[in-house]
Image (tube, rainbow, N blue to C red):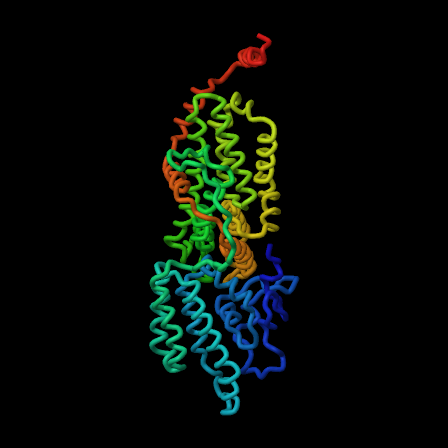
Length: 479
C-alpha cells in the first residue's frame, strides 16, 4: 500500500518526488520572482501539510517555477475531475501561460523575470498540457477543453515556438481516436503454463474441466475486463450517490453535479454485470441437478475452482463463487450441504474468512496489499473506499470557502494508484477458446431469483424438526 507521505506536500518540503519542491518561494528571491498566490489561497494543517488551496494557487503549484513535485502533479491530474471540469483546468493553465510581467520593472529585472520565471512557467504549463492530452484527456467528455487547447496551439503557442506547438498538436490528433486514460501495461515476458485439457473437448461440461484450468480461464476473462476500466469509472461510481461538486467557490457543495464524469462507468458496470452473471450461472448449475449427490459434486467442484482463483490472485471470481454459495436458493439446501464434508468444508470456510466484509474487508485488504501482481482485485472494495472518502470529506474546505480540499484529492489518488498497479501486470496464461466459449455461453444465461428460489424449495422442501430427525435416523440406518 502506498504510504500517505508519498502523496502530500508539506510547507517547506515536498514528499514523494525526487525534486526538492516547495510551494513557497525561497526567501532570498527578488519580489518579482516570487509566487503569485497570497496567504489566504493556501491552507496548511498542524503537520505542515497542504490541506487546501484555491484553484489558481493549485495550478500555480502545478506549474511553479521554483521547484517541481511530480507526485502532487500526478495526484492532481488523476483526481481533478471530481472537483472541476477539464475546461476550467485548461482555462486556468492558459491564464498561467499568459502571466504578464509586474509593472514598472527595469529592463534588467524584466529580462531576469522573463528568463527565471516566465520562461520556466511556460515550459511547465506546456508539459502539463502535453501530459493532459496524452494521458488524461477523454475526448467524448473534454470536447470544449480540447477546442480551447486547439485555439491556443494556433495562436499563443505559435509565438512561443513552432516545434513546441507541433508537439502539442500531434498528440491532440491522436487523442481524438482514444477512449480515455490508458492504463499502464508492462510488457512482461513469462512462459505461460500448458493448459490442462480434457481428452475430448466436444460436448464439454463445466464439471469436466480441471478446477485449475477453469480458474485460469475465468482469470483471463476477468483480467481483460478489469484492465479496460478507466480509474475515472471508479471515481464516477463513487460520486454517483452524491451528485454534488461546486463549480465555483461560491457554489453550494450540496446542489452541484459532477462536471467531468458524464457518460463514464460503462466498463466498470460491464465487469460488475459479468461477475453477477457468473454467480447466477453457478446457482443455475447447482439447481439443475435433481439428485443431491450431483448437486454436491457441482458445489465441491466450484469450491476447488474458488481456491484456485485465490491462488491465482483472482479475487473477483472468488467473490462471485462465494456469492453463489451464500445466495438464498443455495444456502438453504441443507441436505445437499450435509454431503459437503471434509477438506471441501475447511477450504470453503477459509475462503469465506478471507473475503469476510467485516471490518471493511480487513483480512482481504491485508492480503491484497502484500500480494505480488498479477492480480484481479474485487472492484467493490475500491468503490467502497472511494465512496467513504467522498462521504467523509467535502470537496471544499468547510471553514475556508473557495479552497479545494487537497487532502481528499490525495486520498482519492492513493486508491487510483493501487488500481493502476493491478492493471499494469498481465497474466501469463494461455487462452483455451473452447472453455472460454462455454463460459461465455453460460454467462449469458440467468435464472430469475424467484424462479431459482422456487426451484430450490422444489428440490428440498422445508422440513419440520420431527421430519428432519426421522430422515436422519433413516439415512443412518437406525430406522
